[in-house]
Image (cartoon, rainbow, N blue to C red; front, side, top):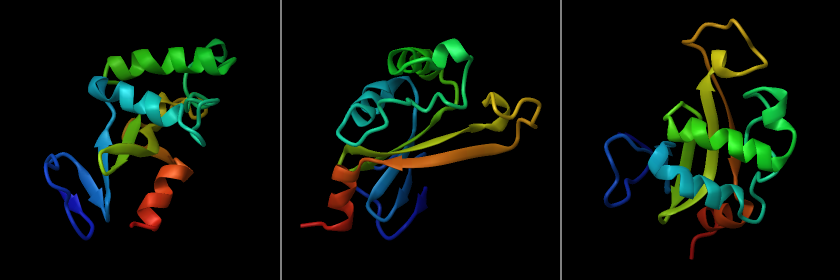
Length: 130
């Protein structure tokens, strides 16, 4: 496990911990957490990180974007990481092989690109703990 200052109890060896945020790979078991974060106040519910994925029909509105991302997650296609604070999803890192992005066709599979988003309400707890 990669680690910042401390590792939360029950952390999985596959997790990456940075200070108090634990990052976990998004897979079928994390779809509910991804929905929770994206649909939370300040979440990226309008984009569903589909701007650089899929075809234009999959990106026409927020409903089609969410519907296009879900099967990718259910098929364990690399889409990103979720960051957890005290067991709650608070951050999202969109990261995947560049070749899976529509903006960069033909790029080598071993190049990965990413983007970090966070829930401002939840991340406030990380910056200002009780």
